[in-house]
Image 1 (cartoon, one colour):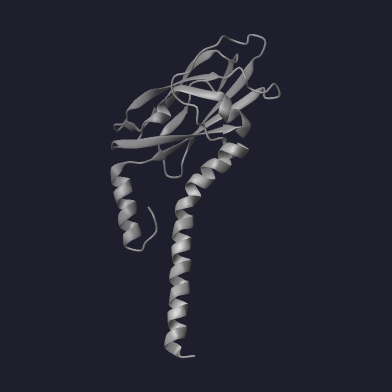
Image 2 (tube, rainbow, N blue to C red):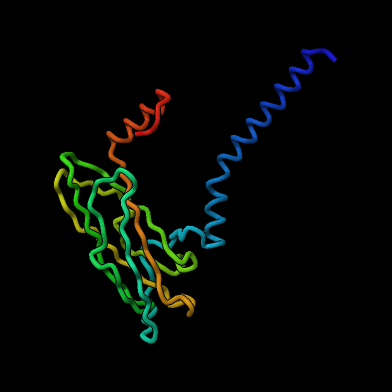
Length: 190
């Protein structure tokens, strides 16, 4: 066996392996979404937008704990107006989160929600949420960010408490550009 044919076979195997890894990388996101939907892992919320109201279950009262968390390096002051809201399934409830940008420059943020227990995520319907869009605050500006939600009457009886947590990320264009530059230069992210 010549070294040229051995090299060609090795090159073919390496190209095939690289192609398979590349394809697997693209498949991970939809596979992860399906896995989260089936298992309830990560409390992924998929119920957003208008919801048909079919009455209120006045016999049950669900405690909804609201939590606001800043991602590392996010300087905003961020949290719920009410840390605990009690709601009957089927009842439309409005509350808000408050944010203040204490910096000397304008910033853009995006909130990412999570629900616990994960099983409850499919029964929490967000009709209007500040997390649907990015939030821009000027230097020193404060804002109240609305949240309007309904808990489905089909929520299993054993769930009496739900935690709705939002993590706030800095997605300011200048920060994104700096992060991209650092990555291209081989440095760490800012």
